[in-house]
Structure formats: structure tokens, C-alpha cells
Length: 371
Image (tube, rainbow, N blue to C red; front, side, top):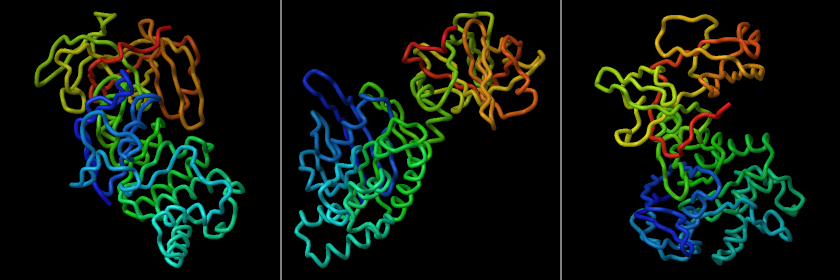
């Protein structure tokens, strides 16, 4: 097990700047996720850690060891690829044993280690079966076993669940976490799936256009996004372009940029105000589940009148799409009798609780969907 330190990493492919000024430290035994859309630099960063790419500038360290220019086979990392990269002409045993044979380990020792590893991934009954005869989930476990059997210092997983159906993905999340805790191995996981990242990670780095936008725990990333991109990429949120009207230690008041008469009162705290909001254009972020819905107008602050555009019933919850000042506000609320009876074109009142609002820098230039 080892820590991973990336210092001032830049990666160019010709003139294309794929990874920009990345500074990152991953702790020993941590389950760390690179999250972001396709082409954001997360897999390129993983490949620099694995040694398949060398950074254009900067250094990669495993603990105190500089491995920036060390070839992959001398880094002692285990890699699980998106397509598993198994040998179809080999049995399960032979696939898992391959890395040990390359290391010229004694046959008796190979047999012992492969058998023990297959037992841990619950594939010992399939040792002699061809991998082409296995299900997708079983093939994924073979790939995990092959990576783990060499006892790597670091386990690298590049979108390993993207080829599985929804139920298998859920099962394999649990399996990967179980193995990671059992081996107590530093693990770096690449995904574009927010649910995977939030449910599995100790910490997450969110990437976009080659830059790391934010690093934090799942709760920090979700509840305290650093900017509007992170807020919108991690789950659902409502983003409203706003301008600062008043700011002091007791209160923050912002106005809807397109509706100057509409203002919001916010409690000033680290939870409600992101960094770097002094000079940037601003957006107000509120999660759909934080909005309260009323059938009648009250005198409470941060209350907006709107018309219901769409009601989606999903069993335990109701998804509402409410038109407010030409924009659509998404609301998620638990199923109850009042919500079930709501119909399109009905007037409702939405309360934005002051402690649930967050002011973030506006990087993407977007807001809510126009209607």
C-alpha cells in the first residue's frame, strides 16, 4: 500500500492540453475517485499514474519514490480496464496466474496465491472454466483477481462497471468495496457515474476540460460544490444566475439576475457560500429535495410563486417541474396525498430555505432550462 502524490502535472497531446496544473495527494488505503464527463482528463491522469503515459511536466510519486519515468511493470500497480482485457483462450486460473508467471514466481507459489485470490473474489469453483464462458460480472471479478493477485501497492480501475447492466453494477460496487477494505489497498477509481462516486469513495476529484474543479468527500462535493459545474454534474440541482445585493456577517442577499425584484436571503457560512465568489459571476444553487412546496401563499422569506408544468410519480417520490419567471425549477419530494393530486397548470409556492441555498462562481455560463 502506498500514497500517491501528483505535483504540477500537465499532459499535452500535440497542442491539446489534456491535463492542466494538477496537484493531488491520495492517502494510503484511500478509495479515491476521478469523476467527470468524457474527455475531461480523468483516464489520462490514471494512465500517468499507471505509467502508460508520462506527464509533459510535473512528477508522480508513490510515497517517497519518484516514479515519473518508471515503466509500468516496475511500479507494482494492478490495473482493471473498462473492457477487462482478459485472455479469451485461457482459463480463469491461467488469466489470474499470468502476472505471477511474468514475475517468474515458482509454480507451487503461483498455485497457492491464485487459489487464495479466486476464493476471495468467490470464483474458486470456476478455476478451470474458459473466461469466454463466464457472465459479465464473473469476468469483472476475474479482472479484479488478476490485478489483486500480484499484491500491488495501488489498485487502478478505469470505468470497470460501464459494461454491466444496472443490477450487476450494484452488486459489483459492493464487491469492489469489500475487496478494497479486505486488502486495505490504495485504490484509484475512474468513472463518469455520480452514483458510483458518491456511494463508493472516501474522496472524489471532479474533473472538467482537463482541470480538477474540486476535491472532497462525497458529502462535501454534494453539499458544498465549488462552482456551478460541480453543482450541476453531481446529482440534480437548480441554478439561478444572481447578483450580490448585500453581504455582511449576519446576512447575504442576492437578486435574481433576470428578475431584479426577486431576491433571496441566505445565511452566511462555509455551507452556503463557495470560495472565489468575490469577482466571479454568481449562481444560486439549490437541490430539488431541499425545496418545500405549499399550496397557499405565506409570508415566509424566499417564497416563489410558480405554475406546475409536469408531475412525475415514481412511487416513493414525486418529481415536479415548476415554471417560475420563465424558468423551470425541479422539485423532489416524498410521495404524499397533496403531491399526488397536483396537476399541470396549478399554482404552487416554492420555499427556498436559506440554509439550503449555496452561492457558487458561475463558470459554465448556464442556468436553468428555459421554457
